[in-house]
Image (tube, rainbow, N blue to C red; front, side, top):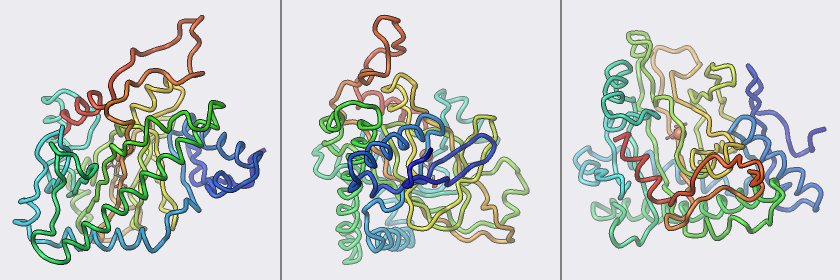
Length: 340
Ligand SMILES: O=C(O)CCC(=O)C(=O)O
Ligand SMILES: [Fe+2]
């Protein structure tokens, strides 16, 4: 029987994505806390995705971040390009439409072929890393005007808010896996995470008809531990089902979509899934699809940590540990280098 805090967000084609009331983990009694944590882990093991409601981030805070994001993308191209994304090691700044092809291909020639087949992704983005990294400063628009200072303030605040939620979700993961609740704390307290603002500009639906491979963001998996994804109500996000079909991950107001990413899958000896997803034409029939905004917070284990299989996810005697340990920062830089 499912705990009361759990219902279904998506249930189609073998893809079951649970909708979890996170307050049951944060402030429930011991039993409620444990069963909710187990449901979170099951969601990551089966679908690789969960939705969280009552996640503790105030509605107004999320709305404010979306509002600042929309204002940011309305800036002139010359300003945005002056804050351009430079290298995978820095992974900060603005990427204009066409700059990045989201894919999980690793070979540059394969990625170019994909670009030719699907066209460029119909999106622009802005990445904000941990503030205060001497070698990799964030790019901020506060040098242009006062609005830029408001943007910076809100994004730094939101980066920190999401960092706290990452740690709480990892605590739930630990409880669900039956290990010490604080097991992941020292892996996640650095805040080596990336806040990515995404803007999918308004698009004629003919763009998707002319070339039916056209997408707003190509199919891919994420790289780190988990991603916290805030989406508006436009729709278009899809998740790959176990049968190999892309299924709509329909927006649910005031929830966060959370997906497990590649390094967590590896860390869990593949007991947790990092599932492919993409963004396509919204399911609503229209001649023109309005702009879509989303905010992805990519969480990573601290870049200086060595990531070796989580306790209890392998059996030493059976020798079923699948991967060598790897440094978190090296792994992520390698993965990022391939898509830009
Ligand atoms: O915009 C979205 O809903 C998804 C974005 C995404 O999957 C990503 O940037 O990794
Ligand atoms: Fe993603």
